[in-house]
Image (cartoon, rainbow, N blue to C red; front, top):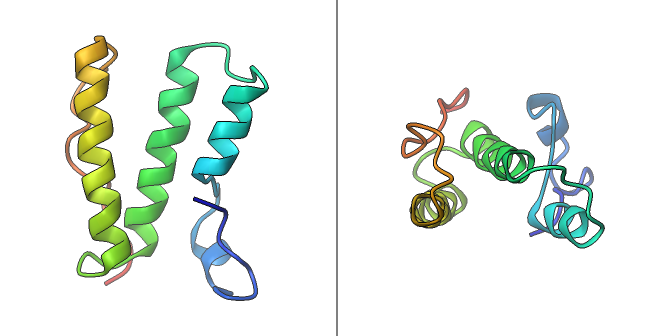
Length: 95
């Protein structure tokens, strides 16, 4: 929901170069910062990519991210906004 706290997770920003969170995305929507649906989708996909890059597969965070990603991709398909294969999570850099 919110950006990761530097004090609670000090190594997060060493690993994740472009952090984003749902509240940031919501703020951008509310302030008309997106010029296209593609920009919105790109930010949401970045959020999932960050989740899978930082959190090991077995963690509750990664599992929740995968469930949300599957739902998001399903909704994109319903809206005709799916831009290709986005059903598999991004590669992980950590164990």
